[in-house]
Image (cartoon, rainbow over all chains, first blue to last red; front, side, top):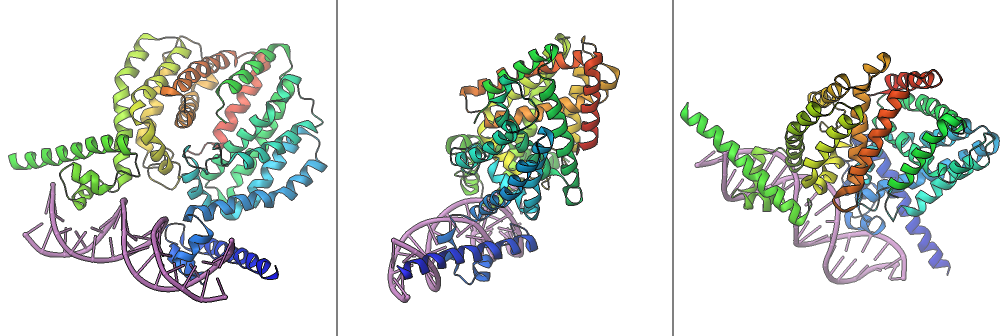
Length: 225
Length: 225
DNA sequence: GTCTATAACCGGATAGAC
DNA sequence: GTCTATCCGGTTATAGAC
């Protein structure tokens, strides 16, 4: 049993090692120029052995993605426990994710090249991504439910999914953001979150209610996840 | 001179031939399984020769993209000359593009894998794509300017760019659309165009004007093209 | 059952002759 | 403009060590 545990640990350590050297090589040379042969060698492995731990080169990147999700959870908890205002809760959780993802900004461009293909398992809308997507949506469920901002009953159910889609949009913007340290993205998160919170608050007004429900109906009708 | 013209024509014909067999092979086997060797052979060429005509395999797809833009222009002219209502003009020109792009739906997934990378010349936001992007925005300029729907002065200038971005969003949706013949996308175009036209019309109302200007300012501040 | 090494395959891309 | 030969890097098959 002890040996099993040791072996398990060893595989885990090797995996970690590959991840570490990959990140270094990707950041030093870019994704394409960092060959699997070089990664394996830097990790002290034969090329083929690396494939025992990662199905494909792209799967290495996917691990960064999951890692960044896990890494941002403590920040999320902090935001959700201290902020009550919808705008601040929304902006807070989204900002938190972008902050931990900073080291992966360059690499993310490549990840998204893969993820944008709807047929690929790594697509955020794919079946395989379902569990991670649900965990993400759950965060927005908490953003909405425990918020001090009153949310109209009709909006309550769908809002978390809409906010998740909003975050997907932010990530897309972030990918394209060429400003230093992606500062534009962070300002954009603040302003657009404020706008969304305001729209949510106003959605009950008689003149606007019709629109609100129309958009909600469209969202339900055309969403593909 | 005659021989030069002949050679020009020959190159042109060869290029066309490659394009034709590629489309067939892509549709029959998918992009990845259609190897350059197979494409070259089907076109009656050696593998290396194909690379004289196309820089990379992906560049073959880019030609479909440009072709679909050119192919949809007649339809655009028709829409712009017959429709006056903003909703119908907007929905019309967008629908037209999606209709001519139908044969390329599968292939487009691969094209977008490349185009989504902001550093890639094929990205719709890149410098290299500038001319094609401008041509596209010009279409929306005409959609707005000759429309019977009154457009507030403050909105007039930026609206074409906003509508172009709207079309980018539709294309993204289209890529993910798994419904038969992408029917969902076409319905979505109608409904969202109607919504946009309504919002434009309402944007002058005192209560809404503030929001309208706020969104406009955000667009100007955060747009990256 | 867990892990690693060697050798080979495959397909995109290039060099250089004609 | 086209060919042949070759490179290069992701990936796989296989065998076997621990």
